[in-house]
Length: 202
Length: 258
Image (tube, rainbow over all chains, first blue to last red):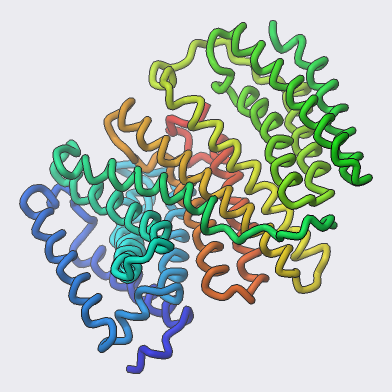
């Protein structure tokens, strides 16, 4: 398959596939048991994930799919799927027992986790792509994408141990601070410049 | 008690803002600033009075949050006006402020009960005010989207898209700051950064939707219809997040519903 030409449409198809895989997992494996991510499983899974990201990044020139994953064509559909499931979650009463099957326990629903995980993976890869350019103007991008990646990943993997603590906690704080700094950058440096000419608007 | 005086402050502030908006149409810049800031000062005097009388920041009830919304609409309006000189923006912000003033006048939701312990925090005021500012900026961006999609109906100019982008960027930045402050506060108060409380769920949805707008615009700057439609969907999410969840059965157990 030639992934060089991949755009947003392929992203939507891939996202649909991811949801289907999630549903399949939900049926076969059952709902996600987050406590399974307790030490040392969390650190092992995270290490594998980070190593996989490193490999994907290293092979991005040879495997166009990995290159595609670092850009908007992948990011927008991923966010749309995560958004759709989050809206469903917002419209459904979340309860540990009863309610609707699957979606009343959205945080334990595989497609929800896979969709958000996909967003985070893309965000992490995009970070690597911009981080290694070592340019001053990449700082806002890196703060925004690395911030959300670090905060969400550390909070998710760290909470497998029950109470968030130690390095996990520090990482979440670091991620949050990066996101806040990134937000200020978004406003000050990333927004398009207003027209210089003080002409009257409509 | 304090609400009995509200009508006088509100009328004076509103008249000053209307005058500011009228002078904006006439291109009388100094008078625009004079009247708008005078209105802001009068309205803030009421907020300050309420703050002192209540012995806490007036941020607890829907009525009190609407007070801040009425206050920040003209503030956001005058900032946008001073930067881009859009004549209509002050009319928009005045109308929005008026809507919330009238809601407060005709449906006063006055709660006298003490603040919940978790709310007695230094995070309280910045968290809500930053969100209010986000709501105001994003409200203005939604107005731009409606104008460009349904009223002007022709391809927007670069300047028009720039102002929409700017409003969304600034609004999303405030949204992010508010959300992060909320997470830090939640950690302090409840021990968790994020619990997928219905308000948080809708905040995440809103945030994500605005991020879709930003990514669409950065990916293909020539596209405008889809991003503007996304901006409107995001604004609907924002309304659900802000007040809609009070009416959603799924959010009945939320710690944010009051």
